[in-house]
Image (cartoon, rainbow, N blue to C red):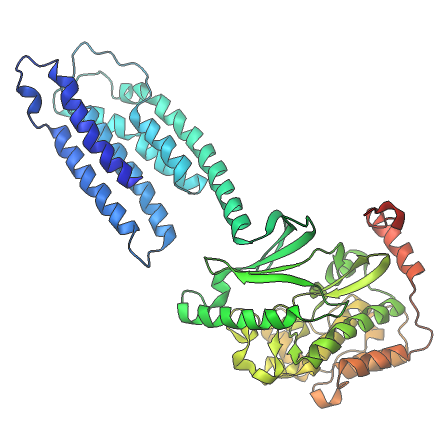
Amino acid sequence: MSLVAAGLWVLGSILGHVAFRSMQADPSAWLDLTIGDAIAAASVLASLLLFAYTRTPNRDPRRILDLGLVYMVLTALALGLTFHSGPILARQSVSPQISWIGAVILMFSAIVPSTRMKTLLAGLVAASMNPVGMLWARAQGRWDFGSASNALLMHYPDYLLVGVAVVISHVVTTLGRQVAKAREMGSYQLGELLGRGGMGEVYKASHRMLARPAAIKLIRPEMLGGNDPAVAARAIARFQREADAAAHLRSSHTVDLYDFGVTEDKTLYLVMEFLEGMDLESLVRQHGAMPAPRVIHVLRQVCDSLEEAHARGLVHRDIKPANIHIGRVGCREDFVKVLDFGLVKTAAGGAAQSLATIEGVIMGTPAYMAPEMALGDNVDARADLYALGCVAYYLLTGEQVFTGDTVLKVITQHLHAVPVPPSERTELPIPATLERLVLACLAKKPEDRPQNARQLAQSLGTIDGMTWDEEEAGRWWSQHHPLQALAPDAITL
């Protein structure tokens, strides 16, 4: 825009002199330099300097775009002064008209991305430059147009164009972001926003060729180390290694990771299978605590996912109800999927080598944090089993093991407090064997807990009378979410 404007200022000045040649009695007078020429020269210089500035490396894109709006206002000021620097006929009437400044405002809104508020404010200031030019001309004694309000009356169409510019800017900027995201996500077309969280956003998406649904999680660049390029670069390298490890997990109860990568603006993205149903946190919040047989059914599936991950040396570190999804997969109801295995810790690598240890990225969730994790010690698979014990407690009672009005109070209780038995916090029956197993998972010392996910799953399977079959699951989903209880013959290939 600035480079094109520099050329237009030169061309406009030349054509202006040519146009005034026929109006001059003195044939050579059309070559005389005017105030308008000085304004044009200054505008050309400013435009070229701005163009050079935008092409230098390591410039903040937001600052560049804001500078573009300032440039638009200065261009409008230059036009306003130029239009009113020449001789003005005394008989010239004051009538409403659209000026070149209105056109400039529209052009900038269609080309330079910005927010609606910034476009509105910059546009109003720019549209006011014609009245400023008229007041300047009157102060120079070249034009008496009556009341100062006539300056606004003459150019009110430009102000109307500012409203049009705001709409154009919003539409163009939004479409530009959507196109950019679609291009940056490779073969996946982004759709509706599914949710936002502390790490970023999750969108529904589809593959361009296969048309299969997917979910794309975008992780904000500021979560990778703020403005420190070195920290961000190390975080990206770790993310790629850990996501690659997670992509090789094959448990049917681990969400499938289709793809992952890093965009040009350093946003991390994970492409996962799209799941229908809800996470356990939402389920308990909406429908209350779950019966013991169903809790066992859920926990054994989570153990299946964790067993494979732990065997590969991966520790999830953020097991919580919000990261455990339950719904329908194929013809099976109450099918569990463990989420967010793209951000894990390699147990053998040490805490310093994990994306999960970067300050501000993932420190676990306090309500489900193992004591050794809260202390910053090295963690292994048993930290996930502690978190799973907290999840079981929440599913059985609808309450978290420990609560407090600050994070520090919650963590302190994880370190020192003895949990209240879940049977004392719910009216639902809880078998004594299940309660002892949940409390064992909540042991402060890792060696006092079940030592691996397989052992925990086997212990859950030995609890008598705790069956939750497909028929019961199907009845529950048909009662609470009838739209998701599709008959198998409703699906055709």
